[in-house]
Length: 264
Image 1: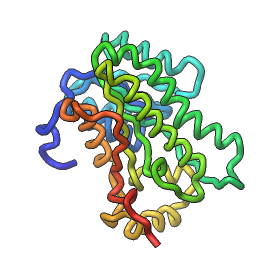
Image 2: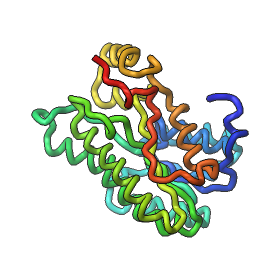
Image 3: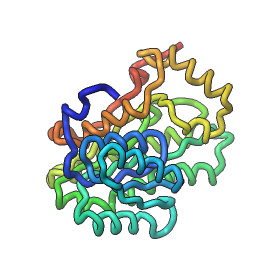
Image 4: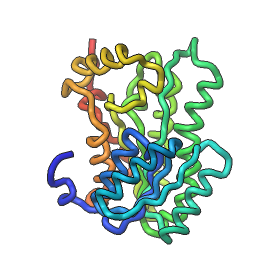
């Protein structure tokens, strides 16, 4: 994390609900939000790792986050997350939809079950949680930040369902931004490129394949390297803060320039 980030903008006093907070971008965002003064409600599927994130947040802010674990595709979990968050803090200012999965597969190899799993987690859960959160965010004139991907803006073979899901997240962002603008609620998204997290390993890449995949970013990313969860978190924090008060409907690449490239 760059020094001075906490001095540029603040989230002090803001209540933020972050999904996917047990690892990767969600965890990095939670820790940065804690440093910036936010009051946190953290969701994740892995309770042990979610507790690890909570501990780091508490060390950064001396405030204990509210943990609202659960699988977002399970019936009743999204409603409970919103209800518990508002009951605990009395309000909701920021929703960060960071939960998501990556699945390998082409039009020939992707099963309907795999397709449904990706769309349910990456799109359906983000839609429904946003739907439930919006009445509370309207009250605080807060904002929403979705974690999308360069895969929603550019086409890549071998990750069909994932690309489709992130295109849907981009449209969810833009449509919701237009629908809520008159109520002074902002909605934006970050679109990371290759970020060093465990998401690719969980999708099935071996260590050797993952090492080669990261090496390839020297050619596919203009800056010649993958990004970090902390870099994406800083952009999310900016969009969630009052420093971005005139920004809505944006799907912002945080991808080292990959969206602008046509590598051969």
